[in-house]
Every structure is written in C-alpha cells, then in structure tokens.
Image 1: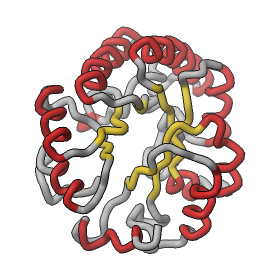
Image 2 (image 1 turned 90 degrees about the vertical axis):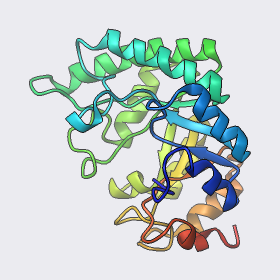
Image 3 (image 1 turned 180 degrees about the vertical axis):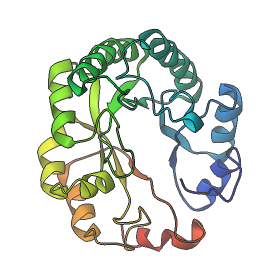
Length: 248
C-alpha cells in the first residue's frame, strides 16, 4: 500500500531510502522469484511477509481457502508461494480465506477453510514458513470468509497446529469494534505478525481515531519481537506521511 507512486520493483529502494529495514507486500506473482529477490537484496531490505496467491483479484477473488471445490487450486497456490518464500528468504505467509460463495453456508465454508489450513500449516512448516490468517472487517471486504476475531480464534483452536498463527491488524480490529490493546495482549501467544493503520480511512497513524500512543506502548512493553507492518494508504506521498515514526 505504500510507495504506490513507484513501480513494484522500485518500491524496495524507496522503502530503504526512508529507513525501513523490512518490507511486506500483497502479491509478487507478476514477477519472477529471482527478480523480486534481486530487488530486495539490492535495496538491503528483508522480505518479512507476503500473501499466498489470491486468484483473479480483478474478478473478485480474495483467496479460495474457504471455497468448496477449489482445494486443488489452493494447494497449488501454497506450493507456488513456497517457491517465492525460499527465493526471498521470507518466513511468513498470509493465507486469505476468500469470499464465501453464494449458496454455501458459513459453517460449510469454515469447515473447508479449516481443512485447507490444517494441510497448509503442516506443508509450510516443512518449508520453514509460518502460516498466518487475518480477520478482515466486513466493510472493507464484504462476504469474506474470516470476518471476526471470534471466528479467527475458533479457527486457530480447531486447526490446532503450532505453525498457524494470527495476523493482528489494529485497523481491522478497530473497524470491528474490538478492544485493541486488551486483545493484543491477550492473544500475544498466537500472534505471528502485526499491522497498523488508522481508522477511519485506513491512513497513517495520527490521521484518525486510534490511540496509537497506547498501541505502540503496548507493543513495546509486551515482549512482541516480530515486525509491525505499515499497511495503510498514505494521505499524500508516502515519504511525506512518515512523521508518525518519530519518537518510536
């Protein structure tokens, strides 16, 4: 979401120039693994997270992990992601649930999701990659197959695999009306990645209603030792909107 004023490959250098040591992105699949790895290496940044293939995004796909009948496609996508993860030396992969198909009950979709995740968590463990799931609020993504924190906790408990962890996005938690800091602290043992954006608008911290002093304070004192991804839409140019990092 950052540095969209640059082409994808050029964003690595732009992020490095602004002092970022790590980068994450949605999809590298329009480029070869080697091309993306070369760009990251040349910029001197670590690739910390990307998504498994999400299907035809323009046609409405948001992954297929909860969709009956697409299990083979899902597994092929995980295998493709492993190829990229190895080339990029990336140890985290976000698996998108997908939109619940019309005519499919939510419970059925969740069962498919759980079975796909159970397979993927083990396959990714073998490859040295942590599997992540993220509840996404229903305003931004209507019909998504993982639309609440309660559901995410249920899925994690049902899959019951140590290599499946929670991607905790403070923006989505705020949009769902969740207690941001309390849930972060409570769920810390299962959190594998953190993302931030202000709410409403999904812009940089300080642009909305979230108390980021409390959020950053909680992260700093919690013992969380992972990355915090700046997954927001800059109000202006990316570099001009980075004042929120001062004092961190």
